[in-house]
Image (cartoon, one colour):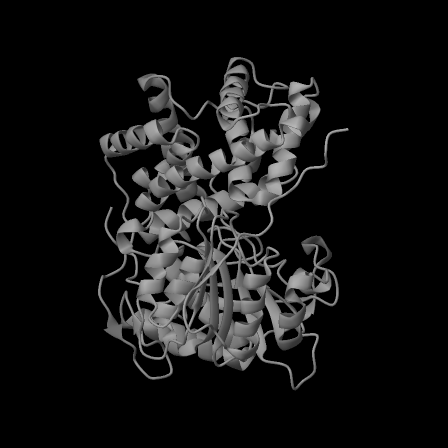
Length: 514
């Protein structure tokens, strides 16, 4: 597999385009051409299609971008966008706030609902900004890609991710290759262009279509990497940028190492949740110590391997469901409740929660396809199975909860048929304003070191640390220490004179046992 992108920086063709764009002058010129066209065309806003689930006064539209920025007049796709107007006066208005929720593969279209649903955390910001969401290229309503039949994708139970022998490893390797081949078969024309850098270029075209000279941006999870790449490519096009729960942008981390680091972090956060379950043993009756709760997890896992629960939920499905507790505090109570009910003889709740989501199959398959396509295209991955086997076996010894499940999810990149590029060197270029970086110390999906790394690379950035917390995505949680600083930054551009450490937000409290 050869890299599609040339390493190094090339000057932009004119002051109106980017400062520096890796990959060649053609891409730099292409962004400029597409952005100029979008600025002239604008966005034809109208009521959103009924099937999109976005109620009035949210409006929807589209922005046309080239599939290949080296050929701005070549084949094009439409990027779906959503917007709700700011709630304040004309004097209070500060432009658009563009949002990406992560993934890669997540849809940002629901973002304006934070305003229409009157989410109190966003009330002040909503007075100043139009909230703008979008589906990145390949996602949902923006030329969606696919790798397998959605029904096949959600079919359950799947094989236990933790291999018992070499034969089971071979079976998983075969599935990963079949998945990679399916991506090439169903979406081959898009695969070479499903990169974070191209998505960042799309964001700049969206900015131009919105009539904004500079971008106000909020990115969570993978959205932080998208923001870091955008800030590197388009430093003069950034007005305000918040990145929340940060992907480590170091080139050597993208993406193989990032997934190994995740495995370690997930192990720690899963233990945090088990400790919380033990603390509330009077409610859940699973165990009164983390060790006892973990023993019951291993027992549940073994039972499901021997005989899938409800015929649908085996170890793979359990890991998928239980990992939500390691992702988000809001999942702590639902996961513990379903498990507790199962232990009391009611399997329905666990099967409904962990079993296949047939209704959401198309969206789930699409999200996974984009995740795989972007991560495989962004960087070169090891092609040696011996390396994958050696590295994941070693990490599994320390972090058995997620390691092999994560390995098989990413293994299609080892046999990927599309080109694999060189990650951008994320760094500060002239014109980049102060960015706000927000991170909890116990985050599993994006370990803390990622925020520290970006903080070093974006000179003048300010870091807010939520000490001792670990829910993924901090800006959407109630923590006045953080919420007030987000408001201050977006409303006035103000940041503290130095980095800030905040105490953690409140953890969920289950209702006491009757």
